[in-house]
Length: 161
Image 1 (tube, rainbow, N blue to C red):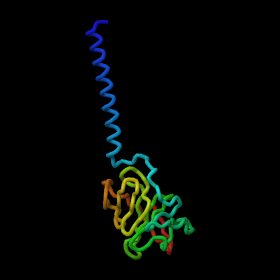
Image 2 (cartoon, rainbow, N blue to C red; image 1 turned 90 degrees about the horizontal axis):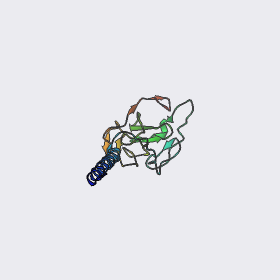
Image 3 (cartoon, one colour; image 1 turned 30 degrees about the horizontal axis):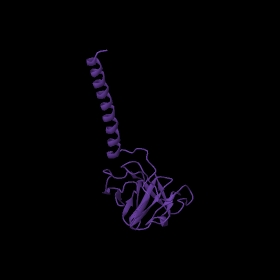
Image 4 (tube, one colour; image 1 turned 90 degrees about the vertical axis):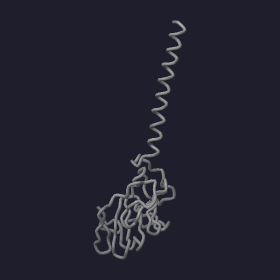
């Protein structure tokens, strides 16, 4: 093998290794900036691990009010809401007697939102905040609102589908 052949081989190997490094760096950066869920669920630090979850930082009820209902109307404060971790649902009551339900899966990276403080649904993974009225983004990094679910009131029971 001549010196010229050896030089060409080294140059080719460097080009290949440089390309591999660039592809790997692109994948890492793309994962950091995506709004697509990544299956990440480790951001629930401080969240209640039961069904009920954080209403103004307090643990919620167990969500079981009998008859297959997810919650009772008394579990959801007026002007705020409650997170039901096991069902991955947030139920809010923007005004008295008006109930809304949303997916508790954050649209940024797929973490479960963990609390409702006042009129804001909180995701502690990366700080996204959503409206209790319509699930829209109040503060990013999420760029899409929470998915709406159907909530029905049957007496004091709240059912979500």
